Image (tube, rainbow, N blue to C red; front, side):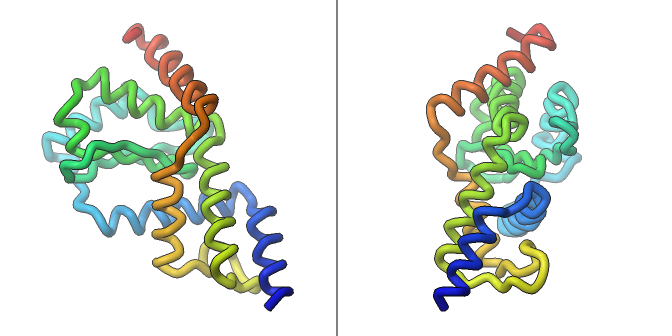
Length: 181
């Protein structure tokens, strides 16, 4: 058991960016399956498409995938793989420029590596609690529950003030290019 725990800790410490993005892909799919996603033809889908076009569909070489979750919750988040989600409750409260600012901030966390670091940290927490086999690809070894835990950890990340400020600056610069600010 001690050897297995040591291997898990080593794996978590050496998790590659590609493995973290693969975990993010699966975690995002898990989140999507547990939420009602607005259709592209809905008022939310059309509005988000307009906002996404303004923000761009690529962040530092990572394709961005935008979707709206139909919930009264007020939230938006992004994962290291370019998965960006905004809740309809937030869209109901803000105009398009405000949503652009929020999503630009979330994209900043991706562009600046904050989301990737948080994904790796969430994986390390799961690895500390569960034995993960050392025989195949990291993402394929994770159960749906573990993927959900990692996704929730990444979504609910509490970034430092410095990282929040960096993401704010990124969003400001992104919007400034469009002469929004």
